[in-house]
Length: 232
Image 1 (tube, one colour):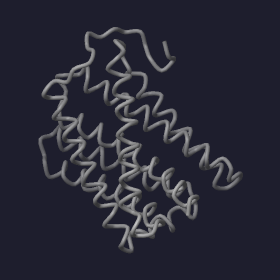
Image 2 (cartoon, rainbow, N blue to C red):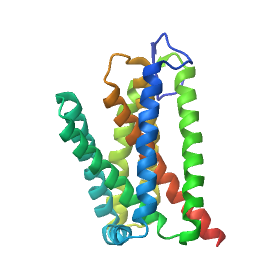
Image 3 (cartoon, one colour):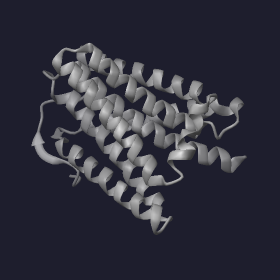
Image 4 (tube, rainbow, N blue to C red):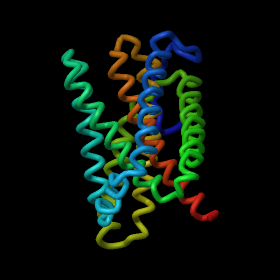
């Protein structure tokens, strides 16, 4: 058994309920909007926001981290309180944060290849999501600790990037890997939540899955861009 799992058994295996399909469909819809925003924003002045924020990498990480965290908290607060206005504002913040960040990465590629880059990224992200989902659904264990490990990875990544920004730039890659790992672990945790917490809010679970998938997407996008530029 992996150290990322705990031995508590569950009674779920493969097979999706209607509520699980609704969560997956909702998260997919939100991701579709995000990817569209990335493509649109890449042709606007918003695409240069990353250049300013990541002139000091820790600044970019903190700004986007705060936007994503704040947007998620607002959206969740709105859903829990039945205030769709607050929930909508939170979702707008999330969409803008991921959309602008992704646009800054995508804008490096020639415009004629941007759709191809997004398509490759979407395929890789979908495959990774399917692998994580398959693993979670195949094992009759709780993945509650994955959420905690994800937080450790995020905090560790921020700390390493802080050092890398001012002391040793080679550590920036380590920080990237840690934050990427954090989103993968968060994805597994959110999928487990959908699998086992059938009484939880569909809206809350949809947001959780969306944030995790979007986080994986923007990291895969960076890797795809590196590959494309190396081939050019």
